[in-house]
Image (cartoon, rainbow, N blue to C red; front, side, top):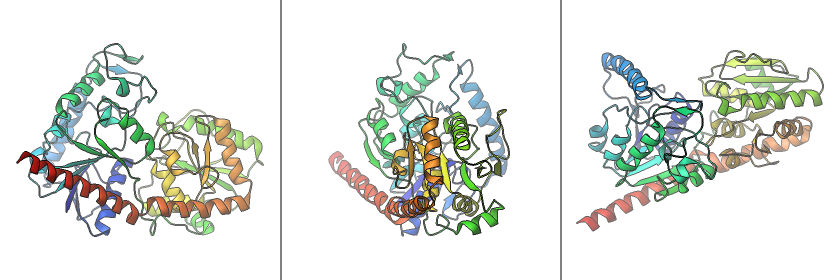
Length: 428
């Protein structure tokens, strides 16, 4: 069985990193797996970026930017989340259809495959969703209440406040309906929350959905390291209680909950002795907000090396992931694999990672008092922290190890191939 993963990248961003980890888990398990990307940062020989035509790449970069600008002409929204309207294509359909792959495994493909391109693929398709774009309009994340447009349809009368100009989200959603009417996807959702969204969506509710977490190499680098060694390597305090947080691109994205974390840390500082707490933030080099943090901060900057990030997890007493909406934040699963308990809101895919009072603390959604209390609950009891560390590691091994996740994918592939063969027999 030959698998070809199709992803915009393999290294830059959470979706790219997750796609590459799924691919590597399969390769390490002996599966014939390859990856086709537009941008590679791994240097892996099993990852292809096509013919290395530097001039064409530069021209495409400029054209891509202009196409994005043109597609948004006259449109405005107050919603800060990323939008992709599915019009940009890298013209890969013929290459993918003519490949020797038995299955095309799609990941984040915005800017790589257009909506129409996806409808033209003729291989059996597995699609791992790393956000909500596949069943929404152009939004990569959207409200998930009962009246959400992806649940009831992108109608003329349910456009959100704060949008004006052409209704590009409705236009994109309708384009998906037309282009994918005869397409059959096998959806892989990394979390139960996203799977429920898929199953309640107008666009994809009739497609098969499987829940499979993103894998981690729990042998290296995602493993425990003695805390004093990790702190010495990163130049962090040996005596302070360290609260770690961060994300790719830092905490600037409102969806990552940086302001909520600030309020929660302020509560912790009021309850614990002064000078005992330090905050460690990765993903940015300094404060981008005018409001100061209520405690001293160590800025790790952009961390591209997983070995360094693993040291940061090991150095911390607690990892805080204050996301408002997220599929399966890998910062949470990575931290637990390194034996660090996680505090997060009881929402989205975080419910699949954090086991309340066993591997960390699930705070009442968006309640900063509850988030702060969770940090205190962990930091104030040394014996409890030790137990949480052991349970976090044990749980990560059971949920995210490569061997387990690769076998789950192989089971899905077998079903997809079997269904495809039955369809061919039926056609004949």
